[in-house]
Length: 184
Length: 303
Image (cartoon, rainbow over all chains, first blue to last red; front, top):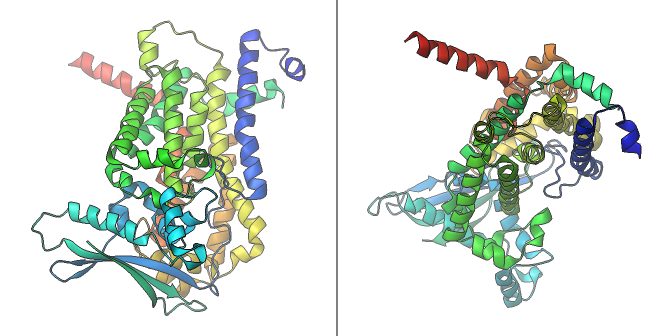
């Protein structure tokens, strides 16, 4: 009734399009407004909260560097974005989430993770980054696939080094925390 | 708002032709197609499903499905389907169906990527454009469909113009809401001297970001000026909707956007290429493309 009153002056063909587009607009913007009000991303509904909290110098932060040891004994830095390019901007959060064992904290856990949890006797006994070696193995194999069989640049081990910027000042960025290592 | 008012706004701000909407369809689907063609799906498929954290609607899919997908053949099937569908929707063949299949496949693929990493926003605006294009007559011109069926029924101009306006509104919402949310969550603290240097340095310490530029480490030396730069960006984001309605400043606003996104690459090692590419919907492609066609035809006739 409201729609027919609103669109009464339009010809029939335009009225149908107007109603269709009104529904499309509402279907897009209502979830976006909801996400904005509650600052909640619920895929595919997005709130553009990138960098919303800003940087805080007083807050310490941890970060990781991926490195490999070649068969010739050299240590090289490896940019994982070149190995799994589909993830590009998401690589650092994938690593952080894996270190934090977030895939073990879901309501529905992957059966292999469920089994691992049982083996360790619960999430509290799980070491940090329980699945990091699996990720390192994939990256190491992808890296070696791009090297000739006889290349001295092939990796024999790959490792993820974690550092901490204690912060409070613009220095001392690289306090070593821990490392995960995977033989290839 | 009454339809008459909407019509008069549309008259002023967006092209009103099936051709213009068809070009937008080709651009948006084409950008996803290029991005997918140049992405290594075999590498993506080798990531273990045990590190997945399905997000949003991706939670409805069972683990068995992800186990099948994260295999060389599973991920190859996904890529092949996406490429086929995006080729069809880009060239405008079976547009009514292909725009919908492209939407579903890309939506799934983007959800998969976010289930490995985090809910980053680069491609999201382009995904929303796919939603719009899936439900509007974007194949009536500049498509194989229109070439095959020469006498495609032309709809009222509003049918072609409003979808472009809707996409422009969505893009404006991205920036406008982003500024509002920063002010809501951080308030004036967002303008503190240490905000930008602390953020930028954090994003420059690892080697897991898009790039490894070190510009951020120079920022503390000029930190007293940075609140002005941050305030400028906030004001630019708040004013972004003017790019739709005020043609005279449109290119200034979009130009600042290009500089802003390139700057975030060098300063924060974060880049939003898909979002930046979506600025192309602000261009009125019809006169430009027709001019190129005409000059080609006249050049051939002169041979």
